[in-house]
Image (tube, rainbow, N blue to C red):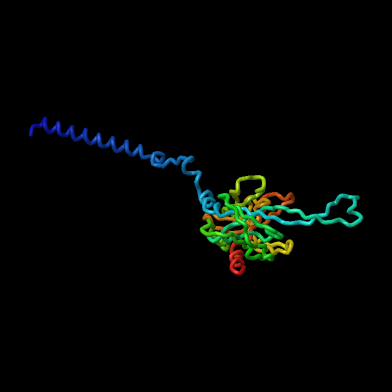
Length: 269
């Protein structure tokens, strides 16, 4: 082989090696951390999270509990003919609203005993706008729990979890119908907070015993009573029952009956 041929081959090899080296360098530079990170479009992905997933699971089973009560009132006219014969009580119907949760496909519902106290009629409204007259299956006034039944089957229902392993600071989701009379939409309202404390106990209130309650700062307002407190798995961990407030509205101190106690009561009602 001629010397000139050897030189040409050697130059070709050097040029080829240089080209390969440049390609490898360029590839290394383009594989920076920014180029390998998958960019998430917030509008498509980040909006859906554990909380929205839990709400989607439970929302169809959250009901409005509309209660009609008959009350006797005295006219209070002041001086009138009634003063000669004594005040004659007048009957009037009063409607109040609470919340409940369907926990069985056959239409069994959990709510608070105080929600249905004195009811002459109980109408349950589902988020899909179906309405049913509910029957009272049983009431535990001591622990403020009531069991209702609506006729039918294949109802949407929520899974009852446990409150035994709750962590202070974990997410808590409250669903219900606060101020439901002001709205024509039967779908529940959702509020989100955390488990603020556990095992809170109180002196008896109106004959009800509230012991070992779950405290949450998820907003609970009038009308939320009887609705579910839910974890991020979509499991019911408590039944929202009352708030502590000087004004009667939410100030971030709400309490729920642990679902383990509720499940035990449901078995015997």
